[in-house]
Length: 175
View 1 (cartoon, rainbow, N blue to C red):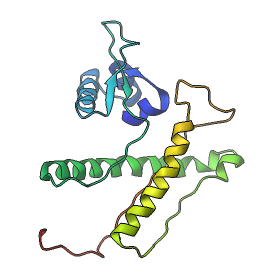
View 2: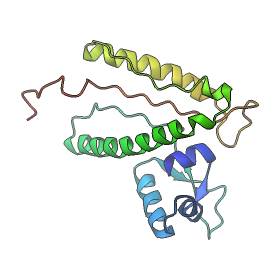
View 3: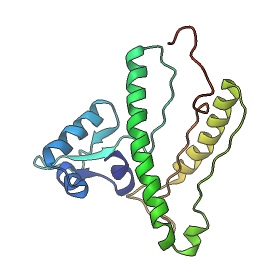
């Protein structure tokens, strides 16, 4: 739902329920949960008392695990599990639709990975450098309600930064 609000703009629980094949009660519940955690906000300019409109609070999601709070870390881990499911679905759909893309979009379609040997500080520096570039492009994006350049479409960039699974063992303070 959050991604849909970012791409298509503000919506109501009823409209989102129809879009995702859910009941309005479930959609309303999830929107309230997203609002409670600051991911969405009520779009008061569109509400009329009967319909409650929601919009994404920010144009992107960025996570970082700098918190010493075990509850915050557990919430981030749960979010990560849910995000992986969504990312996998999006990637599968993108690969499935690739054969039908016009040549101009086929040429920018990429599924790439790099395996680097870095220290934690180097990995953080590289991640921060890449997110800085994306932040500059994001700032220039007019969003779903703005006037985009001719031929512009929503484009998704996923950035995953992690030690290769199985390459790092537990530390003294972790089992």
